[in-house]
Length: 160
Image 1 (cartoon, rainbow, N blue to C red):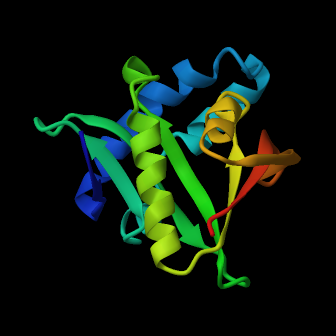
Image 2 (image 1 turned 90 degrees about the vertical axis):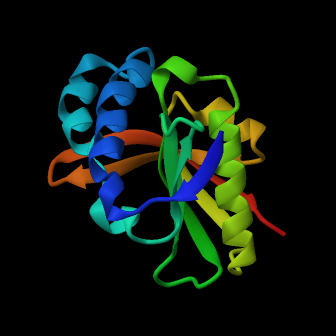
Image 3 (image 1 turned 45 degrees about the vertical axis):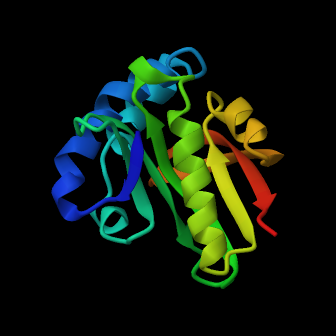
């Protein structure tokens, strides 16, 4: 497995990964009424994020996409970063893909001066983020569109 920054050419592959994995990964922790409105919105790759230089893929040597995710710098607080749109292929969970990806993202963020990282975790991923050193701050409703929110867990980690 290796990690690389995404490019705009990765849009279709990341879209496909999100679309096939999020429904499987989230179904046990969210009611269908939440998923029916949220999945069409969260299961799409974000072109600006893919071009940012801080969004990454985990691939095999045969270029099979196993995971994606990254971070972005906060617009107001220069040394604050946010974990963004992390997903692992549902067929390879618990095999080190997420750990490799998030470890890489945190290392890159630290190298770019980020000292505090925030994450809006799904209910499903909260134990993973705890294992990676994040602390739970509390529940948050992530706005997706007017009238549509997604329940999540706000988490943070100092990178010093």
